[in-house]
Image (cartoon, rainbow, N blue to C red; front, side):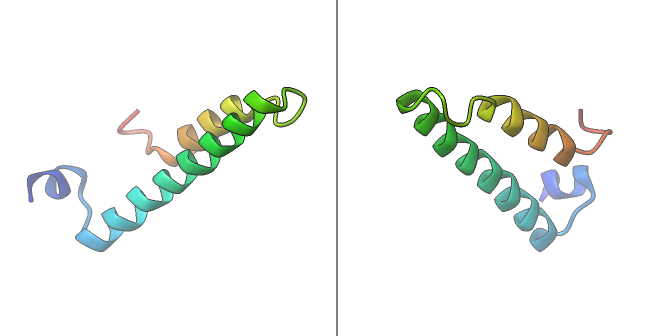
Length: 62
């Protein structure tokens, strides 16, 4: 698997990272949808999600 070799990870390590990132995006999306319905709640949901993702990406990939 070329992608795993390129990033230096095994299958399960990659799976964990991909699912972790997906969960961050999923929770962020739900919060943003709720913010759209109730504007005074989760006013920084998009920024918070972007910052969490930014901290999860290794320096070499950003």
